[in-house]
Image 1 (cartoon, chains in turn red, orange):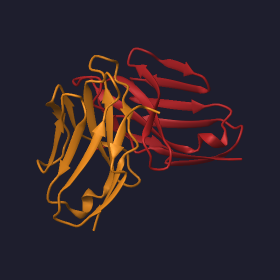
Image 2 (tube, one colour; image 1 turned 60 degrees about the vertical axis):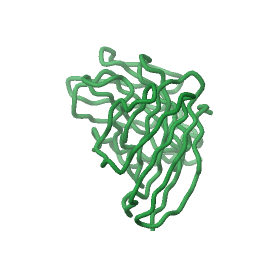
Image 3 (tube, chains in turn yellow, red; image 1 turned 180 degrees about the horizontal axis):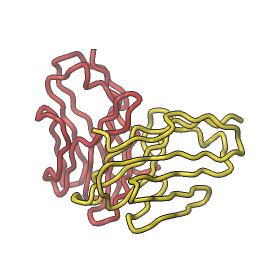
Image 4 (cartoon, one colour; image 1 turned 30 degrees about the horizontal axis):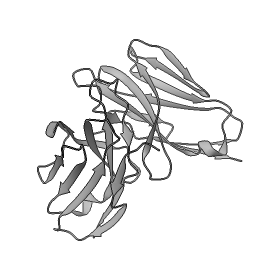
Length: 113
Length: 113
């Protein structure tokens, strides 16, 4: 079963704009990760945030984590057409080891040139 | 490029048949996980292998089975295929004890008719 959901399910923006995606999850976690998937291909790891962190940056990516609300957000700044993809959050439950992930339902991002 | 390779990339089977999917892990990674991704959904955890033993299983029936070999390559076997088994099957390798990042292959797309 899916751990949670991403919101929105789909997002269409103009190149240069920022894109924000949200993720909600259900159980206590060790870490939360964001992955990107191009059109039915493999997933690529973007960023990992630990449960004791509140914000993390990597290049044009900014991730926040609110464990009290069991939610996270991914912000992509100054988007490019090449950012067009599906984005998934993934969590590992506190009771499990760190690499059995439960994925959300994904946000499909389209960046118009 | 994650260093994880899967084969075949696409295949078509009929209901009741059996299928074997293969995965070669990234060099140095001792853990392999398999995920099933139905169209429009996030990946769902099938099982994980560590040192050739199953190390956790998701909510999948016993007709889904796996193997991990001493060189850390892996197989996913599915018996008595059903129409709902049509999906993208993703293999991911990782290093036990690392903070949880998974390295995914490009997947094997299975269609069951």
